[in-house]
Image (cartoon, rainbow, N blue to C red):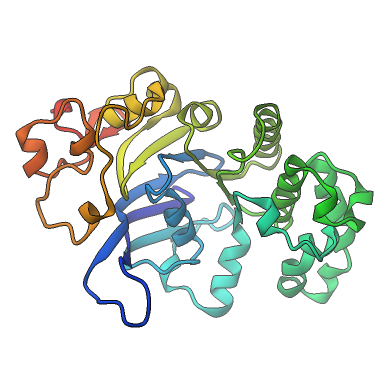
Length: 322
């Protein structure tokens, strides 16, 4: 049974903001996304900025509320029935959020500059643990900080005293303190130098091996995702365009958008779609990638392609594979 199963997840935002904005015009940030993450598996969501991957991740921890769809969670320690995440409330939701933790893209904004590292790591845990467990928090925080490559003495320092890579290590340590089953890493290396990116990726690999936890790894660099992930879903304008094992996707990416991501020439020679094309999509509308696709045909403009199995465990949303 998968650790997390996402089915037909949808989230839309009103296109116009403000109290007097008109209603009925929407941007479909996540449009019918489905995938699963196995225990101790690393699943990647890859795509350009604005494709909906971060919104998808935030729906998983209920930072946003989904309009439609289902999210089922089954903790490794619980061999019984899955939990319907979208129905959780109160204490049950807090318990779920202990098991699924989120590491943000920019540690400079997600770490309170006025707080010491110890308070950053433990502020959430102090509300979640009972009195008997809280007395071991300092030892646990020091141990996890050392596991991420920092020192116990760093507990008394503030984020401004650290480099970008060190701040990201603090963010990872904060996520690990509650011993989660799933760690969501939202563009955790995109703002770092290449050498530091490698260090953080190797750290995450070590954590995965030692703790046997699953990852949802969000990135815009498909090559980095193929290095780190077991399976990858490629997103474009709120939809999953292709999903395959990372090694296979690296060798054989079927979808034209995947080809463009690999070739690093996304959008060159093709018009970029505007937000207006995402407003109120009609049933049976064409492929969302049609305006940028070098292989577009008439049926691509008129009919929406389904997500089909082009090869074993390899899904693609493109008529070329039929």
